[in-house]
Picture 1 (cartoon, rainbow, N blue to C red):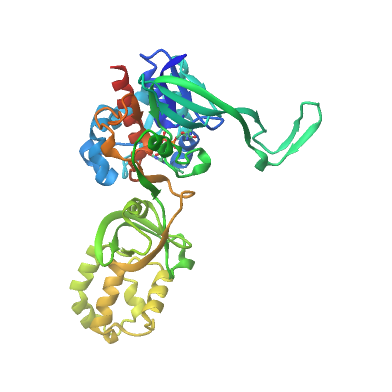
Picture 2: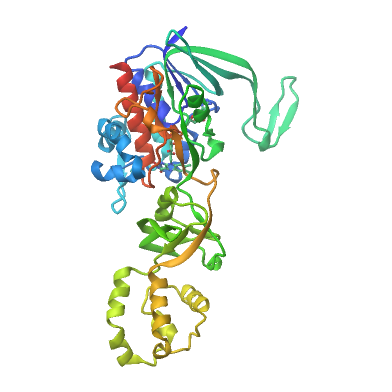
Amino acid sequence: MIYDLLVVGAGPAGLFAAGAASEKLKNVLLLEKQSEPGRKLLLTGSGQCNFTNIRPLPEFLHAYGTHGLFLKPALYHFTNQAAIAFFKTHGVESVVVEDTGKVFPRSHRSRDILKVLLERCRQHGVEVRYQHPVTRVEHKSDGSFRVYTLSPINTLPRTAGIHKGRSGHDIRYPAASRRVLHSGTHEFCARRLLIATGGQSYPATGSTGDGYRLAHSLGHACVPPRPGLTPFMIRDFPWEGLAGTSFKDMPVTVWHKDKKVKTLTGDWLITHHGISGPVVQNLARYALAGDQVTVALVPFEHIETFKNEWDALLARSAKLSLKAWLKYFPLTQALTRSLMELAQVSPAETVAHLNREKRLAFFEWLTAFPLVIQRLGDFDTAMVTCGGVALDEVNAKTMESRLVPGLYFAGEVLDIDGDCGGYDLQAAWSTAALAASKMIS
Ligand SMILES: Cc1cc2nc3c(=O)[nH]c(=O)nc-3n(C[C@H](O)[C@H](O)[C@H](O)COP(=O)(O)OP(=O)(O)OC[C@H]3O[C@@H](n4cnc5c(N)ncnc54)[C@H](O)[C@@H]3O)c2cc1C
């Protein structure tokens, strides 16, 4: 049997593409290596699924760093509003978080989004095979694709507990014994192939970078993958004891060898080993271990006003202690204490005794406290993968390979990574919708 389309990966991109293409194509096969679909999708937005963002599209493009331009045709083909309307048509109403523009299903359950995708596949007769990890693909001289998988022979129970063995005896399984044994290979043949295997982050969900190897075997270059949307671990971190302290709408800047790389403004927080929060995670795609990062502890305008009022303050209350002076700023007591320790000034010292040099240094700290990135989070903690199938070898207007006719890509397997806020899922919907529409046109 020759399938009209074979999709590898039952994540958001693969499910969406298979469902859309099967409205016209008769034989669509979806191969998934896990025992169930959309494991990562279920985790999104802490299980609530922030599936897009309502920012206007021209602004939207900036959420993908320098790669937004590649996504433009896809995002305009299937917009954020189209995604909201699509899920609404399938019974999932959405809600918007005012200040961030994040869109969630009203139920706040990612499972509802997954259900819609699965139901569309079911209705259009997509053949879905789980526990079929694709290990190899070939492009034949007649233009078709051969796809090889390992096929399952035995799945041990998913949960810990006692289960009846074949002979009727009880068998005790710890949770860790969950595994699938594979036997031999299966071979499938298809006219078109869509690789939607995702990136390499959260590998337990099934995204282990297989798509890069498959694409590479078909002649595609891949930008080396690295963790994206991760926290920063900080060298000699001074605020270990202050984990949980958070800052709203502050500029954070990454510096490489004293050269400014990128500044973003948003919310950040202190963790046990460094800093995290949306603005830090969004900066991860620009940062390297060893780079410096400066974080604002108080809003810049606040400092400017304060600097302007400094002389008046001195005249008014020269005997003000440093500790009392720092109360003018919206800092926690613990952070104030820490800053004074780091600056080696006594809390009892008065502002009049704070020489100009120290005062300016303090001001600088408050708006740009310097830290050094020891390392970024790894793939186990990164929410997205930077890097992937190189974009210059993929047609942005069709998602088809420029090297191999009939080969398509969708979702995170591409060298695309979005900011926090629903941009990655929107990229998955849009690239999948565009690829499917071009396949069937
Ligand atoms: C904790 C967490 C929270 C997130 N929250 C959000 C959020 O709220 N909003 C947002 O926009 N983004 C979020 N993201 C990012 C988003 O989940 C991903 O960008 C999105 O899932 C990518 O979709 P995809 O279909 O391309 O890949 P994936 O979701 O990774 O799916 C790929 C599928 O392919 C399968 N597969 C892989 N290799 C093979 C193979 N060899 N054979 C067969 N099948 C294979 C995998 O098992 C998997 O099912 C989050 C990510 C994480 C980790």
